Image (tube, rainbow, N blue to C red; front, side, top):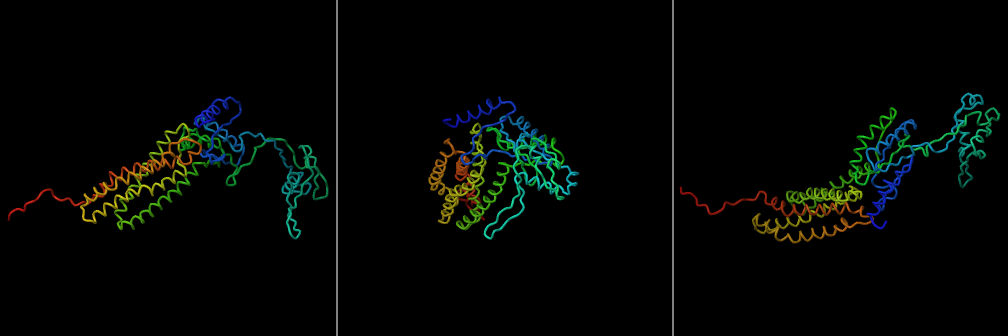
Length: 415
């Protein structure tokens, strides 16, 4: 593909037309972020945990087809697979025979390990290095050969492994997956590009999870991981950093103005800037809905912290100039008007340079733009709204508690 539009069209054709024609086969194509590798950034992991693997497979199939119904176009990948397709040899011990030769299941398991990858017996130290001592039987190439391997019992007899355990051919999962020591099957769901992560998570919780739990045995659990969990953790961490930044900023401005009231006036630009950043991010998300939208990622959250240091500059210029004019003897009304008149050009210049410096990051398409587009959107929207607040609402707040002098000359009444 030569550009982003062609890539999106190619993905649509592959996922919607090509892969839909293969019977009993599922697959998908996707485009990972530039630094995302194969892990991706828009995914929800549904972890199904239960004691019985057969029940897990049934619940996994139920969840797989339920997600396909409620989210057409979503990419779903199960770990491990939903089919028992891996050849497996299963040994079913004969407890009576094992007891007759003076063994128990533990000794039997040790013998079976020796006939496989090897049984670890201990370590040998030659004075300088340690070596693992592993007991491994001669090689075998079929279940029949495995069953015919000789085993020396505790009584000195030699019997075949097939006399102590029944060797059967079967099929098993491609891997055994455990999370928190529980047998787990994971459904990795990547929502369609035109669906927000919050909406996808709500659909899964409301429509998919009840169907999965209904097909699981008692004690089965369903948990969510992936982008949603990582976003919650990052949001918690960044919220603490945001609050700490506001507190430090307030203390610094209070030391500059020597007034807690004026510091609060300056900090009132922060909520307005935050609202502007959220609105701008939402507008960009709607504009890019067909290309995956713009999500609230870590860099976008950092953009809100950067916005703190930018939006207070204009308010500091205005408040400091107004209070300085009052100290020179001007009335509060005249001081505020003078501050707005003298600081209008610097405020517009700083705002314009900040906005136009971020506009290319916000609007220019290309590979890797998803990394910084959210941060640029937050800064542009926050600067626009905070500037309007600084020039319109902040002067009115500065004139609070202004002493109003009566108009005209009043003549005192005669006694």
